Image (cartoon, rainbow, N blue to C red; front, top):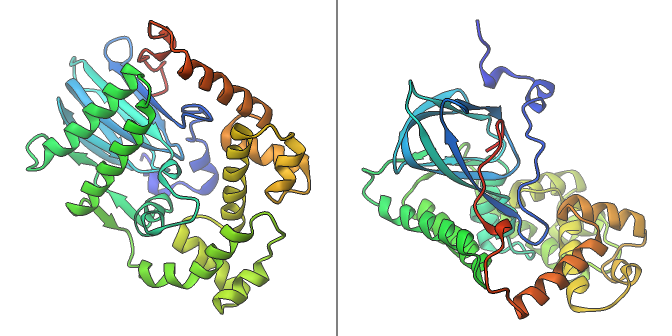
Amino acid sequence: MKRKLSELNKEEFKQFHENKVHGTALRPFAKYRTVICEKLPGISAHWHEEMEIIKVQEGTGSICIDDKWFSVHKGDIVFVNPRKIHSISRYKSEDMVLDSIIFNLRILESTNADACSIKYLAPIINGTNLVTRVIRTKFSDYHVFDQNMTTIMQAYNDAIPGWEMAVKANLFWLFYHLYHLDLVHRAEHIDESRESESVQPAIDYIRENYAEEINIKTLASLCGFSETYFMKLFKKATGMTCVDYINGVRLSQAANHLLVTSSSIIDVALGVGYNNVSYFNRQFKAVYNVTPKEYRRIGREQSKAFANPAPDVSADDEPVEAPAGDE
């Protein structure tokens, strides 16, 4: 008898991880067009850290998310939560055209962990909240999501100056509607407002002192908790460990310094709280998928391109069809 995905152990689950980078350091999201047909009858089961939103542009097919199969049709919009195993299959001899955007929810987070991050995004990232999986064309407010998805896809395809802001703005608007229309469901009860308030002193301290040495004992003391309970509560409230949050703030500041200053890599690292440049380089590449030096070069090249736009859209900006096995 075939085992359910919910029965997989940790090591078995890891085997379904998709080892593909979606987007770039300065563009942390990617759009794909996939045609499910005789030559590509399906996409094998896999999961990724990013969230994925799929719109069925043509045809009919089947999408499986965590052991549950959905028959999808033209116009349907499918939400795949982070770290959820999913696959796509052809239905009989029907072809299906899909447009999807894959993005890390952290691109919508603020480095100061504001209410948007703590109340709405972090619970989806850590699996406490789950977005409804399929919005049908017959849904009363379907037009809202259809408009958001259309704008996102159009902005990505046109690639005119400011298109990245259009993508992020419409993602924010989309999540607002998901929560407003009660399409995000809790996997477990959690008093987020109380927990976010309890760790706020630590968040404020990190934001103000990221360039200095920060230890868990100090942060826990500011909030009035033991170190063990503080670390557990911090992760539950923000969706990440305290160490990851500190690194996130420091790396965000470093990325900004790399683009707006001519300081050396060493000075940038020291200026945001890293005493070990090798460690800084590893952490930076782990988050941005490029080294600090490459990040600065890419940023400057893109700045020049925006200042002197080419008359025609580059072929690299055209929508692409995902290869077999990917989305």
